[in-house]
Length: 162
Image 1 (cartoon, rainbow, N blue to C red):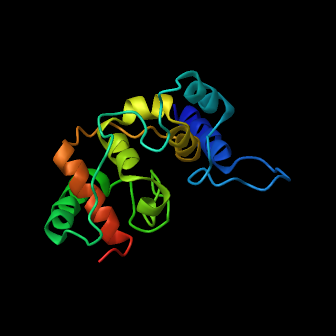
Image 2: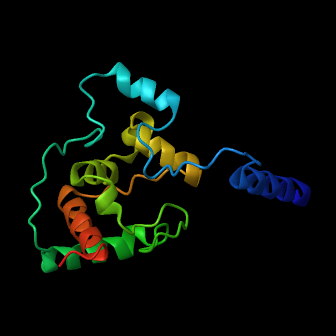
């Protein structure tokens, strides 16, 4: 049993480290389109909008200034549902760090991903690129719509919006 455990740890380490490639690494957080398979899936559905992803959020109105109360509520959601996998820096824990996330993705995309991670991971090229990097699917935390909006406002605060 111990041999099986050590073998699985070694395989996971090798998979996470990758190989020796002479090609420069692409940053999957900023990759346009994701993997060829994901891009083909996105192209198969012409109504799919890669800027908003798949979900109910089609237009989110964002004020130029931060809503401190909403950001405080978002911080509470983060502390309960998110901080065990995501750091507020650019450092990857289990999932990617949140630094500058609101500059890389639109509010609609983030909120659709937070409330609909399974479908987004199945359909969205950018979400699939993150999955390739992190190697762990984000679990569905059953985040309510208003909590998703509060989380987004907390992300904006983390990104320096005042």
